[in-house]
Length: 301
Image (cartoon, rainbow, N blue to C red; front, side, top):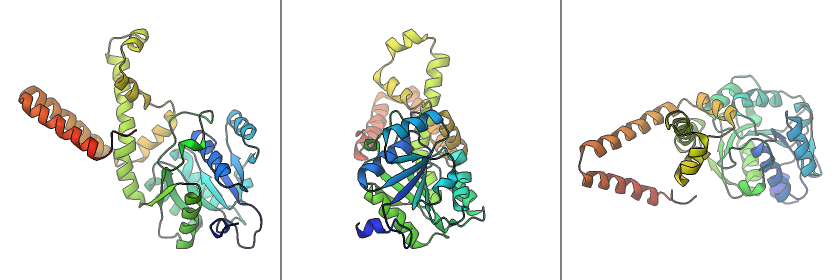
């Protein structure tokens, strides 16, 4: 084994890395696929509350063992917690409190500050916990659409904290880099501030826009299907059926309110320019906005 893979193993252990995954939905199953694809000798143990999803994943991956309880993950070298934000902190705390476990715990929730505060305030051994968030995956429920291709080359944010030894941060970083992630260090507060703008706000807008289509358009379903443009479908696509996750995100990230206020202000400003100023003024404003989109690489999907 290479020196980088050795850092995954407990002191004195020999054999292949044993990785735990909690939550075998779209993201968790994609991570399982990525682990087994990139680390040839790795084994995975996973815990999934939905028995149908658990069966699908177990049948798909011969080196992934379904486990009924978190207790079975105590022997793992590293555990990834891939659950909705609202239940992530209690799972992390339970894993950290397992006796005789040296597993490094990394979560993948898209909010960080509240989860980290709960974990750090729990009295658990937080030296083994690193906050994380991969900027990839998707919105669909369950493992059926999962695959390593959804994650390869993606950015994975790691949020360290004061009780985390540098050695454990490095273990997490090396593991994620071996999977092909581009690791970016970011404090939990800054993560939530930035992700509320670049991820959470667009999804909130998508839900509001789709609600407008449903409640205020006056079109029945068949008419909407015929008249919806590509832009309509693109926006509505992000009104995810994974409502529990986005409920947790919208309620768990208090930075979202400020960006929502700024967005509403920009809508009102554009409406005012269109109604009260000249055609040239409106054209200049729209061109300025479009120029930024191009400079920032936002044309690329």
